[in-house]
Image 1 (cartoon, one colour):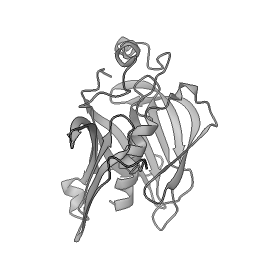
Image 2 (cartoon, helix red, strand yellow):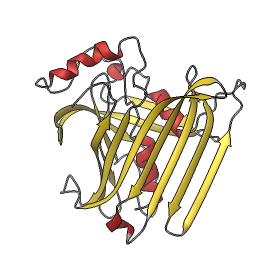
Image 3 (tube, rainbow, N blue to C red):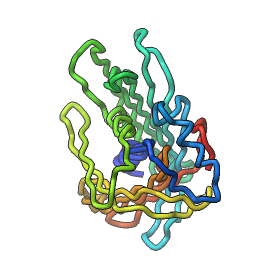
Image 4 (tube, rainbow, N blue to C red):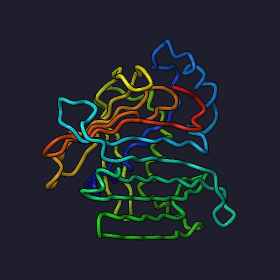
Length: 260
């Protein structure tokens, strides 16, 4: 499992994870979804304690679910205090399965602490292990600074606050992150109903820009499917490689305030 595959998944699976949609786009048989508008009305578009787990598999284009289970990944957000300042602690992690680890063991951990009011980064850290390669980095930021720096995780959660009920096919979202203000985009491909382990879900289909290198095709071939309702939960992702495809699918969820 390439380090860039895991990182790309971790930093994109939360994009637009919530919004303020005026109507639900889930399957009508799931009446629980109709309660989401009331649940999130006037509040943040996610609940502290929310946890989403995904499974990552490798396969070919014709096999939509992958043929080899490669890794698991999850994201979580919790309330915290950072030097007595009310904040959110956002974490993202991923690691290869036992079988895949026989070929290449990969384990990533990322943490971002953000100011609740402005969503600016107060602390960011990551720990990466890939075979014999290990890297750890931690950084604190001045909470009193007027500069609103964002690491990749806090940048993603700022995007989550966007009301994407206003988005239409062909729209492009521009955003940046990191000290160097790395620029990236998401293009809206439309809305699509997909099958999941939880049943049929109507989704918003997005295409992120992705760099070209020796493993990845690059361009806008990658696709993200996000539930098209008030919570807008990432449910599926496809990342084309030069040989094969990486598939990411929602596997478990906790403390979301709703059920699939």
